[in-house]
Length: 374
Image 1 (cartoon, rainbow, N blue to C red):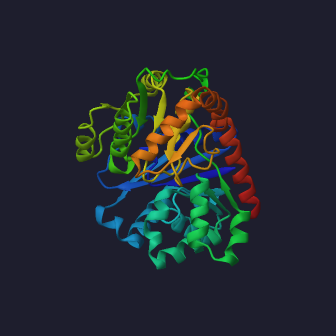
Image 2: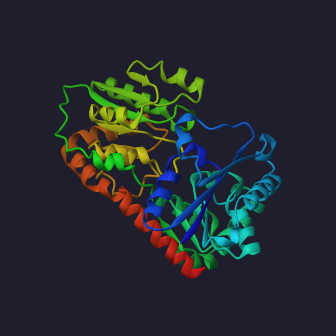
Image 3: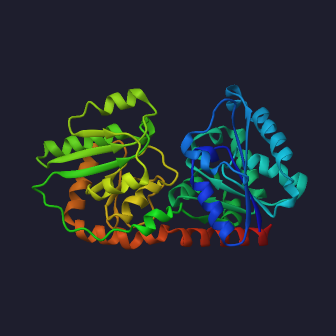
């Protein structure tokens, strides 16, 4: 297959290139088109994936963010300059509206079928406006396949936006496939851990960019609650500071430590020196850090009805928690401590479902089935 990845944030995530490389190793030809705002630039850590397989164009300004159609027309103009769309077997639009709209127009013009991913931002943005809701449904009707990264978000989309007459056709071409782990985590799978000694300090870890949506203040408050219950606990937050006010709020908590961004080689040592992974994000498309933590035997606490929820039964790998309730989170930490060894073993054994060969095999099958429909 000859596949085109159609993105607006390829230059801010290594995941796309990881998938592309895995598909190319299976004999497929994969290219990417990525659009960005003028002057946005590319962080040094992403420069390695900006090569001959990617066309990156800064082609819209800050005002175009709110002007949907002019922005899309600018993107489409550069897309058609960059590639012969008709030469591809399939286009994968990685956002429902901003990529899916143009993929639908390219299908009409060149006949190339497309599949579309639905992310959490698709459920909270333009789709809340009735006109764009109708457009989103049209994009889905004309697509050959729809990919969700989360069972919860698929259920939410069905409940909020689908009419009864659309549900059968939607179900037939829809899959839920999470993100794959980097090979590094597969190659450094840990051994199961023993029970945590309650007399020791319980060490919780959060790995995330420091910004309000990651809800790290609630995580910190949950750890304070544990200490009020005479359970010695401490939270380590690891990540790039993207919101200074949020950083200042978090650093005031007595039992929270903040560390800067770490490479995966540094991060694995932190996973191994902590006991529980806690990240009660307000919104999360998938949350690959939860799967990383599982490979190191850490039970995980993740947000109810967000990205990672639905992969496992509650109480197996950890617990789904209410993002706005530190007392509830503290209760679940206590529950984890009661069954720690069993959860740690479950996490390591079941982290294999996120290994690259499993996820890429599912994506490859999804593409082939979508082409058959297309």
